[in-house]
Length: 479
Image (cartoon, rainbow, N blue to C red; front, side, top):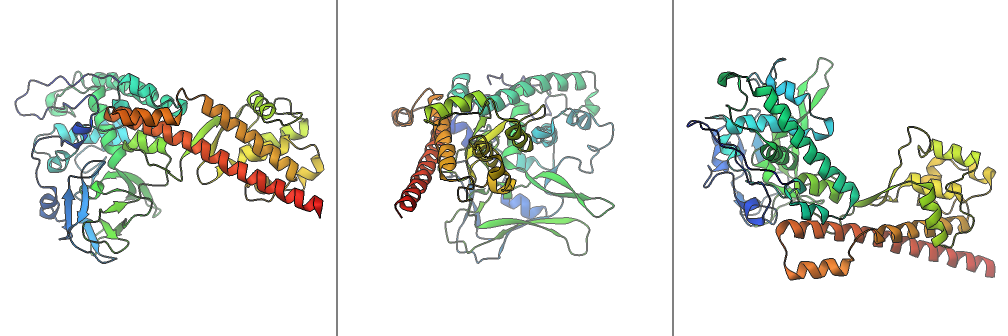
């Protein structure tokens, strides 16, 4: 999204909400202000605890991170934040009053873009002189490596329609929400203005949304009368500098403070941590779409990465013909087969036609069940099996070896077609990386390489499974 920088308000006692409109590797390493306050000292001063071995490292590939200056035993408390330090939407400063401008604006934010709600609070505190959180906010990056800050050509370089849709949707939301904000604050007095009369545009909204999506944690908030707690996104100063790993050495624990109703948020060593090791948290078992959209990085060989396809009968017919599967019936299923498709929510007015390949499941269970059923001719044989069996790749050819191999070959053909939709091949992408490209171009190329690799891995796995089944079939016939 090509967005303009902020217009700096002509107020002498306010903090301008300027930010880098586009992402570069150097701008991501830069803090919001030069020489920001010492974050560790601030956390300790405000009642928090930081283990003496915890240090801030400037050498992380995804920006500054935390490292251990000497060995830390398993179970050690690394960082403890009292209730006053996390940044939340709805603190006891009037933000959560029914008629608050921020609350009204937050109600206009779609649930899936929850980061923008807390982002409004972050922008308010960034603009506020003498904000309690300024030592934390001033340490945030000047910009983020998420696709909404890519130039238009690099958004195209992603080459993956589902992600392009999400990026364009977020960009359109930010441009529209800019107008909502302007209308909400245009006639307010300075004392009532949530951003101290600073100009808020799509660039600053994108900065705050990205800061939250890449750093906030969804934890327990206020307790309801029935004893349950509200799910509350929070920004956790210092803790949020831990980088990601699927096998982390630290975890976040939320505990009630002894003798108080308030909560403590702790980062605790989950394993022994060696000297110079990075402190790592697991951000979640996410695919690369979400890692890039929300965090601004791509994980090579991500075991949770997948590709998204649309279930389409005519498309499957073409794929099965290309695979040499005879008499495909995907676009004209028999009535009993159509009933199965309805049960799988792949047919009917409210059908969910999104299916995936890759990840932990390898093949979307709904897609696999649909292929098995539509490639079968014996209705009674199909009805002998429950839906969970038909959806399971680990089930041993429930409708017979010929049926299973035909399903695998159809999926492999789908993979071939999906690969052909990418304008470039992996070898070309790797050659582009070797030639040297901008930081955002490099991220876009890495992303599409990983998507193509997912497809190739699915093809290899299903080819191996098909060969194994055919080998068993041949052995059984010879026997």
